[in-house]
Length: 447
Ligand code: HEM
Image 1 (cartoon, helix red, strand yellow):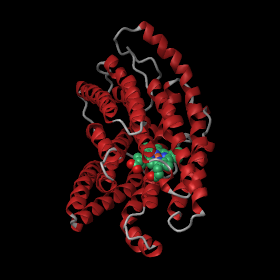
Image 2 (cartoon, helix red, strand yellow; image 1 turned 45 degrees about the vertical axis):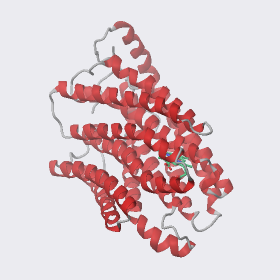
Image 3 (tube, helix red, strand yellow; image 1 turned 90 degrees about the horizontal axis):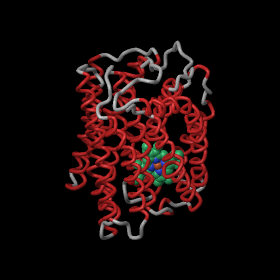
Image 4 (cartoon, helix red, strand yellow; image 1 turned 60 degrees about the vertical axis):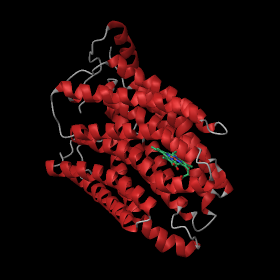
């Protein structure tokens, strides 16, 4: 049986255009029109965040890894039928978890069922990938990033029902505020930095130089990248939870230092690839990958700037007695998620999908409208979300920015779908003709 990236990518696009960005845009519009971040139920925000991480990011990472890693390693995917079962399991788990969030009161028993199903999907993905990489017997620099990304994915899947209990059924408002203040940032760091950023940085080491003729990063840098990013995430999580529960500000200072390491990584990574030097390709994905790395620098710079903003700007200018701006942190989060994570997924998929369908990427539609709308929408969202701290007039502008992004993403999703169709019929034919053997039926991807 041949496993294809297509059903996974389609599930990812479907997530974006339903529970993910479309719902996010509706939430943002509601917040904008009501000039308040409490205008939408927090359960809705949680359902959106979860769908984007396990659904959008999860489906694209699984689909890409099942397809590309066996090719990179010139081997076959272990247990393809088992691997494929992770797709329906993840879909079912996501739907059930969304219902669990939306029931009133939220249902812990349904959440337990949903999270066990999702954990099973993640375990299957991890086992298949580890076995496939081991059987290849070909050790490469990016391998440990994949292993680390899988470990973060498992950690997030195990923590998922615990977080549901802490955020959805805390017992009292006071307890909810404590739970959010203590566990929201570490949990999202495990998901967004651990799963998404570690996987993207690791796969980029293998993909970017081959696909775009970029420079290979040095071994020393790769080693620093691996320990720097994973150490920052792990240290950040531990120092933050310990600092918040003990009230020890030195621990929070150590956590802040981990953000400085991430900023150094964000600045140095594109330099290592020579990403902004003239490239001998007009590939449509390259502009997304360049923009993504600029957003990565913006996001990590915002993370480093967070305490300065909270204490030096937000508190004195707004008179708030709480040193935390929800608006600024939400803006940082979407600089990272839409700016870096989503932009990388759009860029890489717009090269990989037509190539695997046997189409000539040079003749494919340039995706400039998607590029402009996604960047414009995110820039508007990030800047005006911060501005809501100082002027209510910023709310409506922020409120419409989500729809700008959604139009850009719908154009990308439609184009990707059209590019998948030629390869899809080949793939379904190959399913009929092969029985449990891994045959490569698509043209070789130059990566
Ligand atoms: C069109 C794009 C998007 C829109 C319009 C959107 C909208 C929103 C809104 C309105 C919120 C709540 C307010 C806030 O915290 O700022 C939110 C929170 C969140 N979003 Fe998005 N979002 C988008 C893309 C993404 C992407 C790509 C991801 C992840 C890959 C993501 C993950 C999250 C997370 C984790 C939260 C926070 C949940 C929490 O507070 O725990 N979003 N989003």
